Length: 268
Image 1: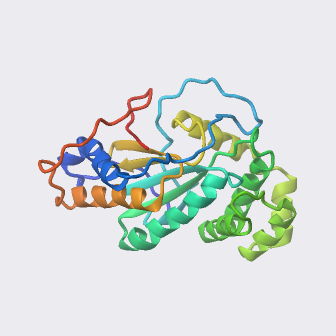
Image 2: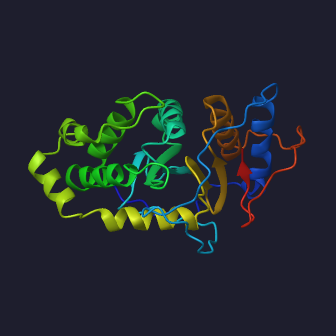
């Protein structure tokens, strides 16, 4: 995996500074006539299943060489998703994000960073699956991680739980030897990494899954819950038009933009 550190791009236009208010326009138009809100799990817990009351500042840690990234690591638009493999909404959103990457990832404009946020209180097996994913990634690299993650989501129906007895098989499908995988799992080599990811997600503002922090330059906003493809596409298209200088901010009047307790725009 290629390292990529988050930096403010000099190519980001001044319009982006106030641009996240304009992102609401894309959501406003794509959501007209729709009444169903995006679904998400609502309980914020750590990997031990305990509520974490630590105050957060709403900022995720910088993307680095420990992350698993689909797309251009230096893309101007970075989408950091905190996810739970057992969450039904995460399964649906995983497909949405793959559609986004198929369309925009190939252009080098968007990067998808997948981080672990297992909600053990709701999904007791989720931390173990997260450990397995990180073991596979640690042994086999970025491609192996994504193959494993896709296999886990694809292996079950939306309301089903993952068959954890098949995790070894999924690791082998990703190209990792059974001996290396079992050694990593038995030693609990990735347990702390999962717990650290949960703390990071909480610090970033995650209280349920999926939770996506959208970063452009030094600006950030949140896509809360499993927003459908047309909404996420509208957000990404809107941002790309701003980056290319093709978005006319004078021609639209955005609706009021909700922010969280940290003042970060929430796009839901």
